Length: 237
Ligand code: ATP
Image 1 (tube, helix red, strand yellow):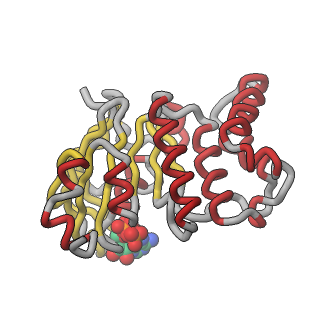
Image 2 (cartoon, protein in one colour):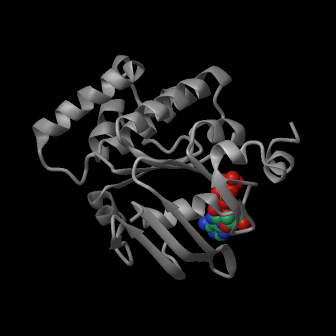
Image 3 (spheres, helix red, strand yellow):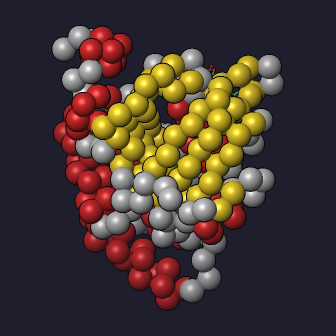
């Protein structure tokens, strides 16, 4: 049984059909990448899994449980955390406060403190800036904070939306090295990325979305040299 099983998912925004009949799965221990042009429905798919959006049709099962109509905080309690696109940290709160907020579903204060320290070991730059307002961090630091905050719920599945968006190439490599490290430590991930090549080089399997639908999928090492992916997303390189 896959850790995440999405079947025939459709999501609308009013009359707009953003996601149409998407089926995909993520096995425990995998990094799965979702690529596709702007507006293909990638973010919408992630937000349906984290329950921030309600599906019009289809099912989302996590660890055998139907997320159905559960509210987002129940999904977090079950082990699903989303690291949102770009700079969606709480700008007027400190780094430390943002991390504490990431643990909002947990109760054990000592464990939460220990996990914050663990995030500071993983992200030393956040430690140096623990009292700084999150909105004044650099783009890369804010991305690190978004990931660290998501990890504060101790997720089994991390949904990562565009972790490299707007970052300098060297910082992008740093973020991907953190992604690999987290995966080696047992975190399963569903990753949405514009940087298709790098995402495929750092994931087990890839799904391609076009106009709200999954058009093809396969092991990332095959997809990265697939003619259709090369032409559509890698500029034929
Ligand atoms: P990008 O790579 O540009 O982030 P995406 O593949 O993540 O794109 P989505 O953000 O899921 O795409 O958007 C899918 C479609 O749904 C787009 O046509 C978009 O305009 C539309 N859409 C997204 N959010 C809303 C919203 N809040 N209200 C109305 N339409 C929306």
